[in-house]
Length: 416
Image (tube, rainbow, N blue to C red; front, side, top):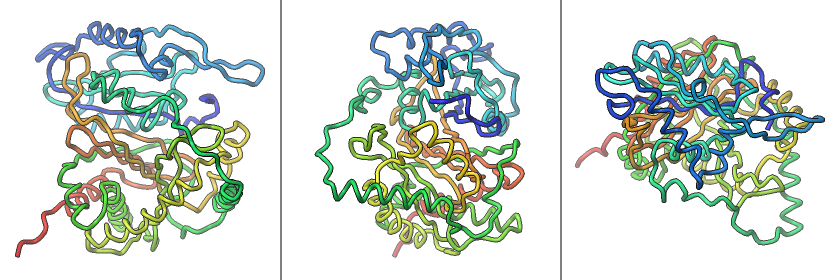
């Protein structure tokens, strides 16, 4: 929990960009009723059964004697929920999201904002919800979205707030985890990725592209070859990154090691963090989409077990450890890109009565990794956002290539 330590060009925030249909506060043909939207969000924040995450929406981070703590701070909803200048369609919404990924949230307020974005569609505005990662991110961020935007009560509260009891860890297993942690620290400084434009200092200009896929078709295509939706996403990312590098005239590494978060059973270590990191070595030079998925499924089965056995990276759970790791990460050549995929709401949500048609998560890029891909399942769709250093990669080109790879992997099996 240290929002003040981040760099201006690497804001550590969870961002969700969405498209609305007319209704509720976004009545057809009228100006969005921000007062109605603010009342709806205020009711969520003041609900007696709100989650801890929503409680953070009414607190800010303060420092005392080198320590950080949460302090009650009633939000000024006229600032936290506001309208911005109109944008030119969906691409304008993506461009605004890219700008916001380099714009820190004010530290003297609760660390969130909800922006209404006119012009995102011809009939209704878009929205952008931005929340600092010390408040929520990943699965916890999706849970907040469900609470704010009318998720089903049972679905919203499905994730336990207390980690399940775990059996005592044997001495041999603890030694293995310590050894694995030391190996991971050493791996960060080991140059295993060939020289590539994917790695290097991250500049201040960002590009974001949105991809929308049919979740059912992606799932069916993956199951046909014994893979998962996550394998299909990784295969599409590998194919898309390769196509974008070739179009830019850049060399393509034989393997693209990707950092992929995985859920841990019951939480590991003193931090209680229930997320580990899987290293998935994505092959390039594989023309057939199905063959690529098969290869990646084999990689992820082994890598996922290793990640769950090793647990969370405890070095990053302390302030000094985070600083050391941040220094190492800016020079590492161990991973080439970030990919994350979270399960989102199965039912459509609504923002103060306005149906939420699409919802794309945008994850930060950090260290020296210039490309990140975030995906979320939402109401039968697979919503994917590409986030890249605009001086190194063209996010729009990569987004188009990724979308084409998803379609190829989702194509029906040949008849006969």
